[in-house]
Length: 426
Ligand code: UD1
Image (cartoon, rainbow, N blue to C red; front, side, top):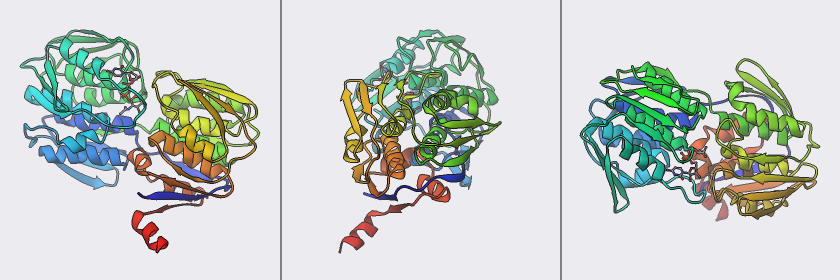
């Protein structure tokens, strides 16, 4: 029920510090269950999906302490053998990582089917295939996945399609299996590499993360570790596009420029100036951008998680742009909302055609999912007038202090809580 109110048309300038990667954090936090000692995680983003992960760990009995805003100490030793609470698991996608980690720890796990953004059908067949290959049995009853195996045995797992979540679950399950596991057709996203680095720092033996083939030699124990999570490439890309859309000039700090290459090259192609430094990028927006074609693909292709934000920018480019969504069936729900602001977008299945317009106008809109919400923020910042974005809980699931960071760069954006809205209405 909380809203963002944006008074758009202000250039974003100065600098912004990017937080730790959401999709790495939500894999690494449950991975601590595999250790037989405490772990300390640094650069953890302060976002709602992390809060839910930590609540699940606490409900299971882990000793979780915030050492500061972004550093957490997790002692997994007191974790009890019990089902993951239904409502918590259902409120995020990454709760499925408790399947592999609890299975490893107790020989069985009961984890409700995950939730997360609605982007079309999101089956779990590849996750289940990997558990079955490793020797586990499973059933799905009353919305809960039950899985068990006395011992997990290393094996070949040739995935039928590239899946980030299934690759991570396979790594988390195989890391302590007996013998060697070879994952083929693995996802190559930066957070896959980050998880492998974390597990290796705990004593795992994982090679090839970041390529199509990951080889894992099972180990009998994993010790505690102190580890800093990589910067969030999607948050960084979102800020890059926001700067471009407001014709701003800003430094995006704490990034790994290599991870941003697919985004950087598309931005340059339409006329945005991007300068790369060791751990920052400077973006200079000029306006008058050219149309382009975008096709989302698994890493190192253009990320589906940047597609809505890039579309928001293309609504203001010259000519006709085409977006092909190559990962999810239904990732254009934001198009209706952008149309309220004057965008000219037509959607045909997994393709969107955008005719660039001169300007957008502020309007009341709804965030239909996490990245759709980020696209609406970008659209709102780029236009004169007031944009009110409802359902911002989607945005807060994955962006750390988005409104505060934008304000520090010169944006006029405030968060109005539900009770403030009621007070204003009476
Ligand atoms: C992860 C990310 C999400 C990102 C997506 C693609 C997390 C927590 N979420 O989601 O932000 O948008 O990767 O980069 O890391 N699929 C199957 N069977 C399966 C699993 C997936 O058919 O068992 C399909 C999906 O429906 C989708 C495609 O494979 O069409 C890719 O999905 P996947 O990579 O698994 O995405 P998630 O792990 O859910």
